[in-house]
Amino acid sequence: MAFARETIWIIGASSGIGRELAIQLAGLGATLILSARREQELIQLRQKLGENHSVYPLDVADLAAVDKVAGQITAHHNKLDRVLFLPALYKPAAICDMDINFAHKLIDVNLTGAMYVVHAVLPIFARQQSGQLVLCGSVAGYLGLPNGQPYSASKAGLINFAESLYAEAPAYLDVKLINPGFVRTSMTAKNDFVMPMITTVQHAAAVIIRGLTKRAFEIHFPRRFTILLKLLSILPYRLALWLTRKIMIKQ
Ligand SMILES: NC(=O)c1ccc[n+]([C@@H]2O[C@H](COP(=O)([O-])OP(=O)(O)OC[C@H]3O[C@@H](n4cnc5c(N)ncnc54)[C@H](OP(=O)(O)O)[C@@H]3O)[C@@H](O)[C@H]2O)c1
Image 1 (cartoon, rainbow, N blue to C red):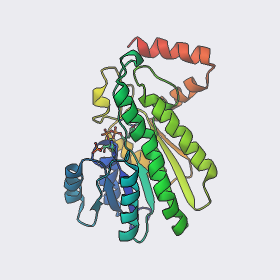
Image 2 (cartoon, rainbow, N blue to C red):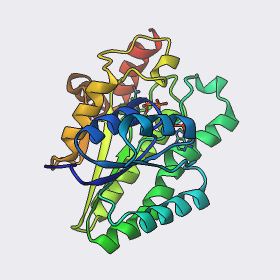
Image 3 (cartoon, helix red, strand yellow):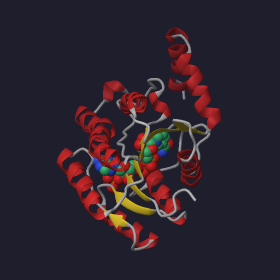
Image 4 (cartoon, helix red, strand yellow):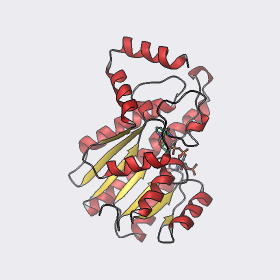
């Protein structure tokens, strides 16, 4: 059965979707490597899931730390089956109110951090001649949305990076991109607007886990919402941007 006896590195496991993925994947028999910055949350999660799982605190914006943890994982685990990259920072604001220092940090985590992780794990998968690499984007990356900057821009970059990675991937490497709609987590708790078709972390994690075993590159949900945004993003700019302003700025 998929996931049983697999070793899966979840980066961004201390809360939200990543934490719930850890709970459900542990229930399916996977051995987890749990990473994020908040060590205490990860230790508590390991206590809940079992001592066979391990905790490697990590700030993905720190290249040396990413390389060090990847090295430690190689030394302590015979095989790494999947790596799930979920870290992201988010602060909703209009661009004129943008906190430029936070914007810099956000790009370091959401986009550069993903590149650091990919750079660190590709040699591991090459040695094994197998592996799955999963990056978490967002529907916010389909089209620049109001009040999401620079988060939307970082996710557009991540989607583009995942596409390049997929296009280049050797046969032994499976690359997946997760693009969720709204999910109820501490991230969306910052939003003061109506979030259409918002779902739970339990539902999100279940859909993602199903998607990890399928052939499709992109895992996106809830479909009624993501398909609407996909359609919006392929309209001519004039119409797409007019609709975006009309629908989203007025809320
Ligand atoms: N919730 C939604 O509606 C939604 C929609 C679309 C996409 N997504 C994406 O889904 C993913 C998970 O989001 P979420 O909603 O579950 O948010 P969340 O609860 O805030 O989780 C974010 C995770 O990223 C970790 N993280 C943040 N900065 C980090 C860093 N520098 N190094 C390592 N880990 C770091 C956090 O842990 P620490 O703070 O302990 O480091 C936490 O575990 C994100 O990529 C997000 O963009 C979410």
